Image 1 (tube, rainbow, N blue to C red):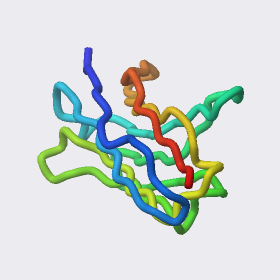
Image 2 (cartoon, rainbow, N blue to C red; image 1 turned 30 degrees about the horizontal axis):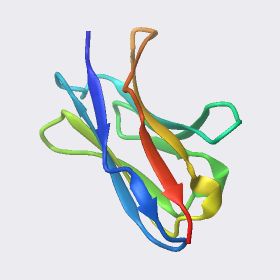
Image 3 (cartoon, one colour; image 1 turned 180 degrees about the horizontal axis):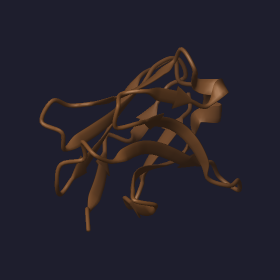
Length: 114
């Protein structure tokens, strides 16, 4: 089964940027890849999804600010986050889905605060 590891989280000021990366133990070209987040005291929510055919969809509140993309080697999916807001504070999780089986990374903390 594929193993996922996130990196790139941290503390950033409002208006700043971060890039999260998710490195997989195998090629993810045939997976539906996604980033989820869980804000403090709230449920986990889908932030961005990248289908194997390249189509993307985003949570309304991050449209125009976040971009999900995959590297050419096919083992890393990233989330570029711009114009960050305090409401973006959460643990961010990488998710891979194939044949109705899901895999999760352990998560990385993103804190947006001045």
